[in-house]
Length: 315
Image (cartoon, rainbow, N blue to C red):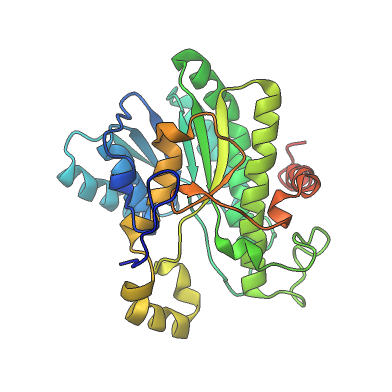
Protein backbone atom coordinates (compact mmCIF):
# COMPACT_ATOMS: atom_id res chain seq x y z
CA UNK A 1 0.00 0.00 0.00
CA UNK A 2 1.45 3.35 -1.09
CA UNK A 3 1.74 5.39 2.12
CA UNK A 4 1.94 8.89 0.63
CA UNK A 5 -1.40 10.50 -0.09
CA UNK A 6 -0.94 14.21 -0.74
CA UNK A 7 -3.71 15.32 -3.05
CA UNK A 8 -2.92 17.30 -6.19
CA UNK A 9 -5.10 19.85 -8.04
CA UNK A 10 -7.30 17.05 -9.39
CA UNK A 11 -8.29 16.05 -5.86
CA UNK A 12 -6.51 12.72 -6.23
CA UNK A 13 -3.16 11.43 -5.05
CA UNK A 14 -0.68 8.59 -5.33
CA UNK A 15 -2.84 6.53 -2.99
CA UNK A 16 -6.02 6.93 -5.06
CA UNK A 17 -7.29 3.77 -6.77
CA UNK A 18 -8.72 3.30 -10.24
CA UNK A 19 -12.19 2.81 -8.77
CA UNK A 20 -11.88 6.01 -6.74
CA UNK A 21 -10.79 8.24 -9.64
CA UNK A 22 -13.67 6.99 -11.83
CA UNK A 23 -16.40 6.96 -9.19
CA UNK A 24 -19.65 8.34 -10.55
CA UNK A 25 -18.47 8.31 -14.18
CA UNK A 26 -20.72 6.57 -16.71
CA UNK A 27 -18.74 5.01 -19.56
CA UNK A 28 -21.78 3.41 -21.20
CA UNK A 29 -21.56 3.63 -24.98
CA UNK A 30 -17.76 3.87 -25.01
CA UNK A 31 -15.52 1.21 -26.56
CA UNK A 32 -11.89 0.80 -25.48
CA UNK A 33 -8.91 -1.28 -26.53
CA UNK A 34 -6.50 -2.14 -23.70
CA UNK A 35 -3.21 -3.72 -24.77
CA UNK A 36 -1.49 -6.08 -22.34
CA UNK A 37 -4.82 -6.61 -20.60
CA UNK A 38 -4.11 -10.11 -19.31
CA UNK A 39 -1.71 -9.20 -16.49
CA UNK A 40 -0.70 -6.50 -14.03
CA UNK A 41 -2.39 -3.12 -14.23
CA UNK A 42 -3.86 -4.08 -17.61
CA UNK A 43 -6.24 -6.43 -15.79
CA UNK A 44 -7.34 -3.75 -13.32
CA UNK A 45 -7.69 -1.17 -16.09
CA UNK A 46 -9.94 -3.58 -17.97
CA UNK A 47 -11.98 -4.39 -14.87
CA UNK A 48 -12.56 -0.78 -13.85
CA UNK A 49 -13.41 0.40 -17.37
CA UNK A 50 -15.89 -2.48 -17.62
CA UNK A 51 -17.25 -1.58 -14.17
CA UNK A 52 -18.00 1.90 -15.49
CA UNK A 53 -19.90 0.50 -18.47
CA UNK A 54 -17.18 0.63 -21.14
CA UNK A 55 -17.07 -2.14 -23.76
CA UNK A 56 -13.47 -3.35 -23.43
CA UNK A 57 -11.49 -5.21 -26.08
CA UNK A 58 -8.55 -6.97 -24.45
CA UNK A 59 -5.62 -7.00 -26.89
CA UNK A 60 -3.35 -9.75 -25.59
CA UNK A 61 -0.49 -11.93 -26.72
CA UNK A 62 -1.74 -14.95 -24.76
CA UNK A 63 -5.38 -15.42 -25.71
CA UNK A 64 -5.98 -18.21 -23.16
CA UNK A 65 -4.73 -15.98 -20.35
CA UNK A 66 -6.92 -13.19 -21.67
CA UNK A 67 -9.99 -15.42 -21.67
CA UNK A 68 -9.28 -16.46 -18.08
CA UNK A 69 -9.14 -12.81 -17.04
CA UNK A 70 -12.36 -12.10 -18.94
CA UNK A 71 -14.14 -14.96 -17.17
CA UNK A 72 -12.92 -13.78 -13.76
CA UNK A 73 -14.18 -10.23 -14.42
CA UNK A 74 -17.53 -11.48 -15.72
CA UNK A 75 -18.04 -13.46 -12.51
CA UNK A 76 -17.75 -10.16 -10.61
CA UNK A 77 -19.50 -8.05 -13.26
CA UNK A 78 -22.00 -10.28 -15.11
CA UNK A 79 -23.26 -7.37 -17.19
CA UNK A 80 -19.83 -6.36 -18.50
CA UNK A 81 -19.05 -6.41 -22.22
CA UNK A 82 -15.54 -7.73 -22.85
CA UNK A 83 -13.90 -9.25 -25.93
CA UNK A 84 -10.48 -10.86 -26.28
CA UNK A 85 -8.34 -10.47 -29.40
CA UNK A 86 -4.78 -11.62 -30.13
CA UNK A 87 -2.04 -9.00 -30.42
CA UNK A 88 1.74 -9.43 -30.21
CA UNK A 89 3.24 -5.95 -30.17
CA UNK A 90 6.72 -7.29 -30.91
CA UNK A 91 5.48 -8.33 -34.37
CA UNK A 92 4.43 -5.66 -36.85
CA UNK A 93 2.58 -8.33 -38.83
CA UNK A 94 0.55 -9.19 -35.72
CA UNK A 95 -0.24 -5.49 -35.19
CA UNK A 96 -1.44 -5.17 -38.77
CA UNK A 97 -3.54 -8.34 -38.46
CA UNK A 98 -5.14 -7.10 -35.23
CA UNK A 99 -5.95 -3.69 -36.72
CA UNK A 100 -7.43 -5.29 -39.83
CA UNK A 101 -9.60 -7.64 -37.79
CA UNK A 102 -10.73 -4.82 -35.53
CA UNK A 103 -11.72 -2.68 -38.50
CA UNK A 104 -13.59 -5.63 -40.00
CA UNK A 105 -15.58 -5.99 -36.77
CA UNK A 106 -17.15 -2.55 -37.39
CA UNK A 107 -16.75 -1.74 -33.70
CA UNK A 108 -16.33 1.93 -32.80
CA UNK A 109 -13.23 3.04 -30.87
CA UNK A 110 -13.35 5.80 -28.28
CA UNK A 111 -10.40 4.89 -26.06
CA UNK A 112 -7.04 3.38 -26.99
CA UNK A 113 -5.02 2.39 -23.93
CA UNK A 114 -1.46 1.54 -25.02
CA UNK A 115 -0.65 -0.28 -21.80
CA UNK A 116 1.45 -3.35 -22.68
CA UNK A 117 5.19 -3.42 -22.20
CA UNK A 118 8.37 -5.24 -21.26
CA UNK A 119 10.94 -3.97 -18.79
CA UNK A 120 14.76 -4.08 -18.75
CA UNK A 121 15.05 -7.30 -20.74
CA UNK A 122 18.36 -8.83 -21.81
CA UNK A 123 19.30 -7.79 -25.35
CA UNK A 124 16.88 -9.43 -27.77
CA UNK A 125 15.48 -8.65 -31.20
CA UNK A 126 11.80 -8.58 -32.10
CA UNK A 127 10.19 -10.58 -34.91
CA UNK A 128 11.19 -7.70 -37.19
CA UNK A 129 14.81 -7.62 -35.97
CA UNK A 130 14.43 -4.47 -33.87
CA UNK A 131 15.62 -4.20 -30.26
CA UNK A 132 12.82 -5.76 -28.24
CA UNK A 133 11.99 -3.01 -25.73
CA UNK A 134 11.86 -0.28 -28.36
CA UNK A 135 9.89 -2.57 -30.68
CA UNK A 136 7.34 -3.69 -28.08
CA UNK A 137 6.91 -0.63 -25.89
CA UNK A 138 6.99 2.00 -28.60
CA UNK A 139 7.00 0.80 -32.19
CA UNK A 140 4.16 -1.71 -31.93
CA UNK A 141 1.97 0.86 -30.20
CA UNK A 142 2.98 3.55 -32.72
CA UNK A 143 1.85 1.38 -35.62
CA UNK A 144 -1.30 0.22 -33.81
CA UNK A 145 -2.30 3.83 -33.10
CA UNK A 146 -1.68 4.93 -36.68
CA UNK A 147 -3.68 2.03 -38.11
CA UNK A 148 -6.66 2.65 -35.81
CA UNK A 149 -6.66 6.44 -35.98
CA UNK A 150 -9.23 6.67 -38.78
CA UNK A 151 -11.58 4.43 -36.79
CA UNK A 152 -11.14 6.73 -33.79
CA UNK A 153 -11.74 9.84 -35.90
CA UNK A 154 -14.92 8.38 -37.37
CA UNK A 155 -16.14 7.36 -33.92
CA UNK A 156 -15.46 10.82 -32.48
CA UNK A 157 -17.36 12.46 -35.33
CA UNK A 158 -20.31 10.08 -35.28
CA UNK A 159 -20.68 9.95 -31.50
CA UNK A 160 -19.80 13.60 -30.80
CA UNK A 161 -17.69 12.28 -27.92
CA UNK A 162 -14.02 13.02 -27.43
CA UNK A 163 -11.66 10.14 -28.23
CA UNK A 164 -8.70 9.56 -25.93
CA UNK A 165 -5.36 7.84 -26.49
CA UNK A 166 -3.32 6.95 -23.41
CA UNK A 167 0.31 5.81 -23.63
CA UNK A 168 1.73 4.08 -20.58
CA UNK A 169 5.16 5.56 -19.94
CA UNK A 170 7.28 5.66 -16.77
CA UNK A 171 9.47 7.91 -14.67
CA UNK A 172 12.12 5.58 -16.08
CA UNK A 173 12.02 7.86 -19.14
CA UNK A 174 14.52 10.08 -17.29
CA UNK A 175 17.19 7.35 -17.26
CA UNK A 176 18.24 7.17 -20.89
CA UNK A 177 21.21 7.17 -23.23
CA UNK A 178 22.90 10.55 -23.55
CA UNK A 179 21.24 11.27 -26.90
CA UNK A 180 17.81 10.19 -25.63
CA UNK A 181 16.91 8.03 -28.63
CA UNK A 182 19.75 6.12 -30.31
CA UNK A 183 18.41 6.48 -33.81
CA UNK A 184 21.58 5.13 -35.44
CA UNK A 185 22.22 2.47 -32.80
CA UNK A 186 18.83 0.99 -31.94
CA UNK A 187 20.18 -2.52 -32.53
CA UNK A 188 23.70 -1.97 -31.18
CA UNK A 189 24.19 -4.89 -28.79
CA UNK A 190 27.67 -3.75 -27.70
CA UNK A 191 26.32 -0.47 -26.29
CA UNK A 192 23.13 -1.98 -24.91
CA UNK A 193 22.20 -1.46 -21.27
CA UNK A 194 18.81 -2.87 -20.32
CA UNK A 195 17.67 -0.03 -18.06
CA UNK A 196 18.77 2.71 -20.46
CA UNK A 197 17.02 0.91 -23.30
CA UNK A 198 13.89 0.69 -21.16
CA UNK A 199 14.12 4.43 -20.47
CA UNK A 200 14.55 5.05 -24.19
CA UNK A 201 11.33 3.17 -24.95
CA UNK A 202 9.41 5.01 -22.23
CA UNK A 203 10.74 8.37 -23.43
CA UNK A 204 9.48 7.33 -26.87
CA UNK A 205 5.98 6.77 -25.43
CA UNK A 206 5.87 10.37 -24.18
CA UNK A 207 7.29 11.83 -27.38
CA UNK A 208 4.83 9.78 -29.45
CA UNK A 209 1.86 11.17 -27.49
CA UNK A 210 3.29 14.70 -27.67
CA UNK A 211 3.71 14.69 -31.46
CA UNK A 212 0.41 12.88 -32.00
CA UNK A 213 -1.36 15.50 -29.87
CA UNK A 214 0.18 18.27 -31.97
CA UNK A 215 -0.96 16.65 -35.21
CA UNK A 216 -4.49 15.97 -33.96
CA UNK A 217 -4.85 19.55 -32.72
CA UNK A 218 -3.57 20.88 -36.04
CA UNK A 219 -6.13 18.72 -37.83
CA UNK A 220 -8.93 19.89 -35.54
CA UNK A 221 -9.84 16.35 -34.50
CA UNK A 222 -11.61 15.78 -31.19
CA UNK A 223 -9.11 13.17 -29.96
CA UNK A 224 -6.55 13.72 -27.21
CA UNK A 225 -3.24 11.91 -26.70
CA UNK A 226 -1.48 11.82 -23.34
CA UNK A 227 1.11 9.71 -21.54
CA UNK A 228 1.02 8.44 -17.97
CA UNK A 229 3.37 7.17 -15.29
CA UNK A 230 1.51 4.52 -13.26
CA UNK A 231 3.89 4.64 -10.29
CA UNK A 232 6.31 2.11 -8.86
CA UNK A 233 4.44 -1.19 -8.71
CA UNK A 234 5.49 -4.81 -8.29
CA UNK A 235 4.27 -6.70 -11.36
CA UNK A 236 5.76 -9.50 -13.44
CA UNK A 237 7.64 -6.89 -15.50
CA UNK A 238 10.58 -7.37 -13.10
CA UNK A 239 10.91 -11.08 -13.88
CA UNK A 240 14.26 -10.58 -15.65
CA UNK A 241 15.86 -9.23 -12.46
CA UNK A 242 15.60 -11.94 -9.81
CA UNK A 243 17.25 -10.15 -6.87
CA UNK A 244 15.37 -6.86 -7.38
CA UNK A 245 12.17 -8.83 -7.92
CA UNK A 246 12.62 -10.69 -4.61
CA UNK A 247 13.37 -7.53 -2.63
CA UNK A 248 10.44 -5.76 -4.26
CA UNK A 249 8.00 -8.46 -3.26
CA UNK A 250 9.27 -8.39 0.34
CA UNK A 251 9.20 -4.62 0.82
CA UNK A 252 6.82 -3.49 -1.92
CA UNK A 253 3.70 -3.50 0.25
CA UNK A 254 5.27 -0.77 2.36
CA UNK A 255 6.84 1.45 -0.29
CA UNK A 256 5.23 0.67 -3.67
CA UNK A 257 1.77 1.15 -5.09
CA UNK A 258 -0.59 -1.78 -5.33
CA UNK A 259 -2.18 -2.63 -8.67
CA UNK A 260 -5.49 -0.75 -8.08
CA UNK A 261 -3.42 2.36 -7.30
CA UNK A 262 -1.16 1.69 -10.30
CA UNK A 263 -4.11 1.61 -12.70
CA UNK A 264 -5.59 4.85 -11.33
CA UNK A 265 -3.79 7.37 -13.53
CA UNK A 266 -4.59 5.44 -16.71
CA UNK A 267 -8.29 5.25 -15.81
CA UNK A 268 -8.33 8.91 -14.74
CA UNK A 269 -6.88 10.11 -18.05
CA UNK A 270 -9.13 7.75 -20.02
CA UNK A 271 -12.44 8.66 -18.38
CA UNK A 272 -12.42 11.69 -16.10
CA UNK A 273 -14.18 14.87 -17.29
CA UNK A 274 -11.37 16.96 -15.76
CA UNK A 275 -9.14 15.75 -18.61
CA UNK A 276 -11.51 16.78 -21.41
CA UNK A 277 -9.59 18.71 -24.07
CA UNK A 278 -6.24 18.17 -22.34
CA UNK A 279 -3.69 16.76 -24.78
CA UNK A 280 0.06 16.26 -25.08
CA UNK A 281 0.54 16.11 -21.30
CA UNK A 282 2.34 13.69 -18.98
CA UNK A 283 0.32 12.52 -15.97
CA UNK A 284 1.36 10.88 -12.71
CA UNK A 285 -0.66 10.22 -9.54
CA UNK A 286 -3.79 11.32 -11.46
CA UNK A 287 -2.41 14.84 -11.91
CA UNK A 288 -0.43 16.58 -14.65
CA UNK A 289 3.27 15.93 -14.08
CA UNK A 290 6.52 17.45 -15.27
CA UNK A 291 8.55 15.13 -17.53
CA UNK A 292 12.21 15.50 -18.44
CA UNK A 293 13.54 18.15 -20.81
CA UNK A 294 14.05 15.49 -23.50
CA UNK A 295 10.38 14.51 -23.17
CA UNK A 296 9.44 18.14 -23.96
CA UNK A 297 11.70 18.35 -27.03
CA UNK A 298 9.37 18.94 -30.00
CA UNK A 299 12.17 18.41 -32.54
CA UNK A 300 13.08 15.08 -30.96
CA UNK A 301 9.40 14.09 -31.06
CA UNK A 302 9.17 14.90 -34.78
CA UNK A 303 12.38 13.01 -35.51
CA UNK A 304 11.10 9.97 -33.61
CA UNK A 305 7.82 10.12 -35.54
CA UNK A 306 9.61 10.07 -38.91
CA UNK A 307 11.99 7.34 -37.72
CA UNK A 308 9.03 5.22 -36.55
CA UNK A 309 7.21 5.68 -39.86
CA UNK A 310 10.30 4.39 -41.66
CA UNK A 311 10.71 1.35 -39.39
CA UNK A 312 7.05 0.41 -39.74
CA UNK A 313 6.99 1.06 -43.51
CA UNK A 314 4.06 3.42 -43.17
CA UNK A 315 5.59 6.52 -44.78
